[in-house]
Image 1 (cartoon, helix red, strand yellow):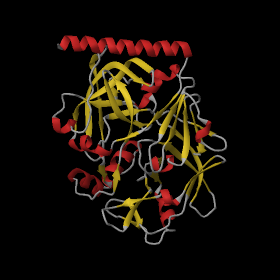
Image 2 (cartoon, one colour):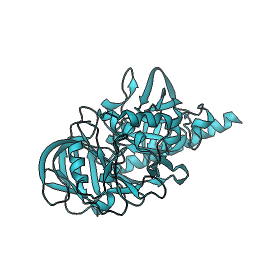
Image 3 (cartoon, one colour):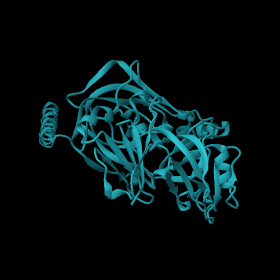
Image 4 (cartoon, helix red, strand yellow):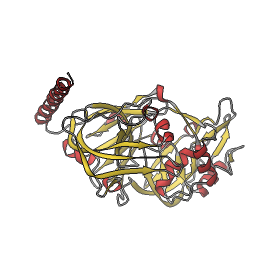
Amino acid sequence: MAAFLRLLDLVMLFLSLFLAGSTAAGNARRSFSLNQVSRPDNVQPLDISTLFARNLLKYGGEIPPGAVQSAETASVSALSQNQEFVVPVSVGASTLQLSIDTGSSDLWVFAPQLPEDRRKGHSVYKPSVYSSRSPTKTWAISYADGSFASGDVYYDVVGIEGIWVMQQAVEVATNISNSLAQGAGSDGVLGLGFSNLNKVRPERENTFFENAKLQLELPLFAAILKPDGLGSYDFGFINRSRYTADLHYVDVDSSHGHWSFNITGYDLGEGEITNDSLKGVIDTGASLMFLSDSIVQKYYQQVVGAESNARFGEWTVPCSSLLPSFTVMINEYKAVVHGDLLKLNPVAPGSSRCLGGIQSNMNAGVSILGHVFLKTQYVVFDDRGPRLGFARQS
């Protein structure tokens, strides 16, 4: 019976690949929109110590000792609810709900042999009949809060909306910390940074986008995240109906694997541009906007009752306050984030204090623009250049 089911899996997979190949042959290259889905059953508390450790360490941020200690003991209060928005991806013989992360370059998933408490709430990777395990390669990720994942590297079929890569490196977590397993609302991560950031050793592997881009009409994708609902990603084309006016492009420095670019200035909401050259990164895996201490302090000086927690370093504001907007200057383009998006949930149920959407980058030396910024913009990640394109969402 098991042999029959495995043969049936092989036949179904072959048919799906054949049909996808026939479609691709007829239409040359493909383009599509990939809609996010929510995982309400996997809503997890988001604490500031974990957020700082996981968002800032990879950029060289100096995590406060108090924050790291609290993450390790899980003693810090939840600051907001982190509902996970994911996309369906065919990985081997399984369909998994993965988080898209332009701040990393690894496609990693949960192994079926993990202990039950590590697999709880997650679908696990099922190798296809085409899969093979590398006898020499491994991978590992770790964060300042003590969370980690590591394991084996498989080569398997990975597909999204008729785009298939036959020998894609799939990083299978055979070892994962309890905090990372419980804190992940997805079944893994689809990293869309540049391949030189990949964590497979002794030799890095290409990302899914790197391997699949020649199948797309254009070698690019675009992020359209939404403030109060499900967003989407456009692959292989630019959707003119998603944004207003014109796209404004800026060159990308991919030398460190990130979608890095130059910010030319900012406006704290007063209508006055401060010309200041800053290094910026677009990171769909980051929740907030992380800027230099001096900019963050100037911003919150405008908000009556704003406070910085000396132990953890996070800024909070009265939930009743009205926050000013923040504008990021990208050459001549003004990317405006309105104040209502910069005040997040209460730091605890019933609290009158809310978490600010702008936080310190803890001397990371780079401005990290995450969900708070992306929910206002149509952002194109274009491999030609490479370059980034920005426009206000319609």
